[in-house]
Image 1: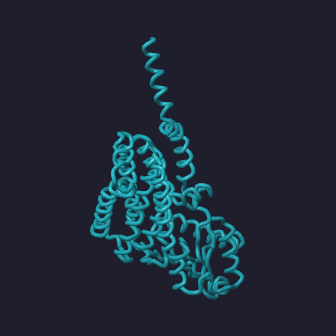
Image 2: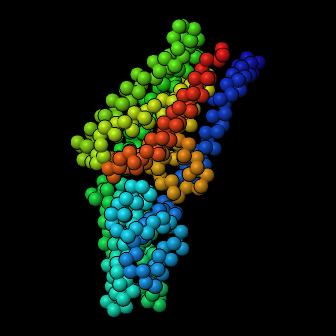
Image 3: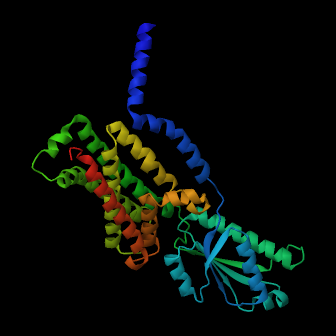
Length: 366
């Protein structure tokens, strides 16, 4: 028993000595419960929509009031033309647009039926389906109140599927898969490689050579960026040729966006390797601190609008959110630089800050 106690004591000392790994092991179940509990939900609140009211009468305003009071939707725009609606989809990130026809109140009273149009952004099929059901439920509430409790349906609803008329689910997954591949190949592999150099002591040997520190780091990271870029090209080719996913924007602009995100992913990997002391630290921090948030907090699988405000703010820290929004806009909506420049600026700013911080941490001799 003395031998067993000695071995147990040795192992616990080893565990407590590696503070990063010990913290991650304890934090992992807490993070999983909180993230999964708050992110996996079928409800959507305060989805951004536009309403084009061509009637402007008392009943159309009443319908708008019911929509606003429902808490399902947040009206962010009142466009005057369908061209304005198209622009709102690109610049204001609306998920749905409602067109109320002229003479709305008169048609309700005399013809007893009104044709009303819903334009849905179906680039995310799940969100579009939920929001359409919410809107139809609001129409039912309106007609029940209008007919004094009798649930007659005076609306002939015309639904236009924008950006994904065939309702293919591949439109949702391709941008997210590209982000995950870049995170795995660029951030994970580069962080493990640099951490291995520190763990074995070869990083100190490299740093005393007459080579600038930035060149040492870039030389370690660029091979994984090239591999990640090749994987991205393959994914795009398969998406277009096999699944017939369109690329409405400029292909060169799309590739530039991917390269910028690769730099951002590499900068996160560099920061993780600078903080961690071992390969295990680098792997666990990358998986828990970057890969998991990419899956849950990027809007890839679960809509951010239905998450608590704290998690929506937390999602802003991770680059995958901005990359997925930007790549969807370029591929599906045909957006250009003027529509997504702020996402490029955020990704570039993240890269500069993280690389600057990491370089000051790598060489501790100074």
